[in-house]
Structure formats: C-alpha cells, structure tokens
Length: 425
Image (cartoon, rainbow, N blue to C red):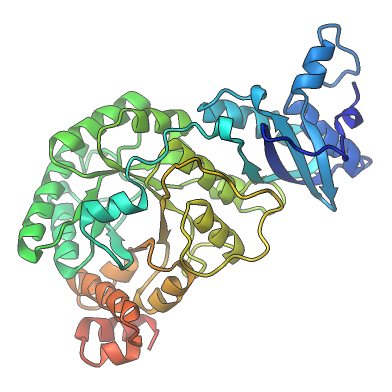
C-alpha cells in the first residue's frame, strides 16, 4: 500500500461519496501524485508503511479515499460516506482536515471546498434561517442593520445598556456584544444581559419596531448553555457565539439544546487558518459546516471595509449559505453544488470597518438578504451613537428605494454628516 495506490484518476465519484477539493503543493523532491496520494491515505485508511497485516481486501475496497482528479495543484479526493459519523462535524474535520496538514509530503495544503452526499447532510441546521430571522424582527424586504457596542471592552453594564438604547432608537435592528466580551469583572454577564434587554424593551416602546440584543455566550459548553438559558428566561431572542474558538462540539450542543433562540455566529480566529490561500482551510468550508451545525447568522466578510476578504470567496460563502440575491460569483468550485436536503438558508453578516458610504456597494454585493454591521461606523459619527445609527438606517433605506446617498443626504442631516466624515457622497 503505497501513497500512489490511492490514485484512481479514472474513478467517477458515486452518489454516496463525500468530495474534498484541496490545493496541494508538494514538498521538495515529491511530485503532485505522491503528495495527493499521501493526503488521501492519511485522511482515510492509510499509514506510512507499505504493508499492514490488519488491512483486509474489504477495508481497502470499501473505505479507501480515492484521488479522482488532479488539475495543476487542485486535487479532488472522493471519500466513502461510511468513513464519517453522520452529524459529527468534529470527527469529519479530524479526518479530512486533520493530520494531513502536518505531513512531510506537502509543503502547503489547503482544503478549499467540500461536498457532502445526502447521507451526511444530517446536521440540525438552522432553527430560524433567513425567513425566521425576518419574522422575529418583522423586517420583510430590506437588509438588516446592526452595530457592535464600542469600545470593545471596558463599559459597565449600565454604560453598555445606554449605548444599546441609543443605537436602537437611532434606527438599527440589532446590537451585539463584541466577540471579546463575555463576563469580565467590569461587565458581569447576567447584569449586562438584564440591563441591555431592558434597554431593548424601552427602545421598542419608543420606536414601535422589534429589536434584538445579542449577548455573547461563548465559554465552555456548560457555561455557554447556562448563559443561553438565562437569556431565554429574561426574554432574549438571540445569542451570539464565537464558533471557531468554541468549536463545533460546543456549537452543536448549543443548537441541539433547542432553546428557541436565534444563533448569531462570529468567526473570530478563522483567519488563522483561512487567510493563507496556499495552506489551511477556506472560509467556504467553515460556512458550509456552520450551516450544517445550525447557525442562523454568520459573518462571512465584506469585500469592502477593513477586513481582508477575497470577493469570489465571500460570494461563494454567500451562495453556500443559501442566499441567491446579490452579485453572482465567478466560475466557483469544481465540486457539484451542495444539495442541502431542505436545511434552511443562513443570513450572511457583513462586518468590519464599514460606514454608511459603503452601503451601495454592500447591497450590490449581497442583495437584501444580509445583516450589515457597523461598529465605528455608528459610534464614530460626529454627533454620537444615535446619529450614527440613524445615518446607517437612512443609507440603507435610500439604496433600497433607488436613491443615491448624495440625494438622500440633502435632506437627512445624520447621513450628510456621516458621508462628510467618511466619504461616499
């Protein structure tokens, strides 16, 4: 059993095969065939030695991964579905994205895309999805707008609740904790949640609109579930979780608790394995697995703004979440389109360095099925948080109505001040 034995370039994947598309860069002295075979071997039934007394013909024929396509450095590997436990995303990643990244046969390796056969599309999926989120907030046909409380850390619960109220009254639909904020000494979780939900109630009474505060419940699984139960008890509608640092085991536990809360997924730390286009795991793979695991909203990048993000990959993630509006992606993956077996679409979240002047580009990129999150683009407004929230709402409503920002700003002071500050006129 050599690495090259895992090459089956004439193999046509069957309906029960899981497919993975890798960028494979062989190590010095190793060709692409050897390197590709090494990846298939290590991620299925192989090992480093050529002979195993325990390897039966049945195991070899039924369970080995097969390298079925090599095009330049792009390698497609077919895996029998029987290699994976349905619904167990950690086990799936331990296999397809596990030891393979440390093999000497590859200099660089990146998992760019996956396709799951129907037998493996068994995750709980979103409880709400795009349509459910719109129903919760009573918003039918425009992008949702939100903000992140700033500064990231340091506000007391009372101070944060006032920021939440000002943002809601200004016009945003959603206000969330920063990904760094959980339950520090200056902001104990339970006190912060109670005060911010009370601020939400006051803002709803003042505006006549439904609002959502998103507390960050990230922690060990028991703590996370306890916090989520508390949010539900206090009348919250949402929780936020840092899905990469929490891990898919924790995320699945939160989703399967089925608390009737919308799950907002932040991707903090994802760039540690996604930014290098020659090594690691793409955001597209993370997005597909997050949808399977049951998030309702997921940060996928902005194209514009402060965060790095390739336009084609952001659009591919948007489509993988089930959103068909917005700009069309390019040629895309060599893998078949995923059959989601009725799993609900996930609402894409664009966040990172955004201000009202970006809204026309953002709506052009994502369409209406998106949550646009503004942090500094709200709280950095020259006239404060309420005016900043008003400016982003005015910008979104202008674009949806087909009005230029410059024209809208003539009669809307908050938007005019924002555009004068950051541009976009």
